[in-house]
Amino acid sequence: MTEDTVRLAKRVAEHFHCSRADATHYIEGGWVKVDGNIIEEPGFRVRPQAQLELQPDAVAEPAQAATFLLHKPSGMDAADAVQLVTPDNRSADDRSGFRFLKRHLADLSNPAPLETEASGLLVLTQDWRVKRKLTEDASRIEHEIIVDVAGAMIPEGLAQLNRSLIFQGKALPPMKVSWQNEARLRFAVMAPPSGLIAHACALVGLTPRAVRRIRLGRLPMAGLQPGQWRYVQDYERF
Image (cartoon, rainbow, N blue to C red; front, side, top):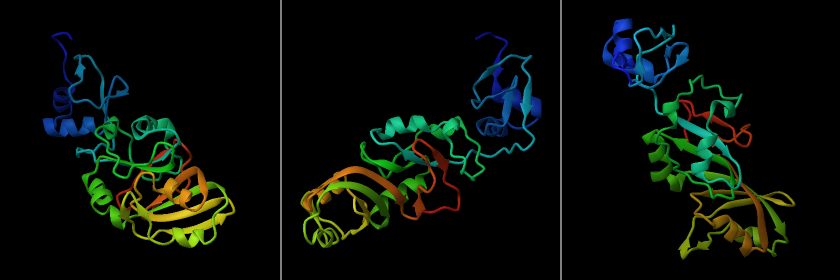
């Protein structure tokens, strides 16, 4: 660092005649370019000769907390899955209009986990309201899970799966289970604990080969391909 550099927030405030708070919002919102490159860090050091550009549609507002829907591939835990949230992996079907910011990747939580070997819809969020909804109201949020199975189901096995099961010493709410085809089951279940799907399949003589969550509450995975993500829009609710 040399003595003639200054914090970007100070330089923006002076150059564009705005408050330091507004300058910080412009920068953190990804609206400021320094020598042609977007810089999102208010503390970034710039030289006096650096060329600053404020994008025409810039707004001096705090950046919104982000929530992502990600199609997690099988075999990947949530920590690794976060690494897939890059501009290159953004779904072409993302119609949110949100601008991707580096700060959207900070302090992401995973309030509705998926087992490592499962694939499908994973929620990553910075929004405390989403986190609270998916944790405090978990018992009222339905998970739709598709399971490819091997083996032959025991007689009356489907009826057994649709009754309340005992798992880890607790009686669980009844699930809704149906065949999608001769080798694929659909489960609709509230707050499934880890290991439940494998346990349920084993009870009726089946072995799960692939487990994929395709819906969480009212939000489906829809057209997201493995490794792709999109933003959750303001009006969407779980």
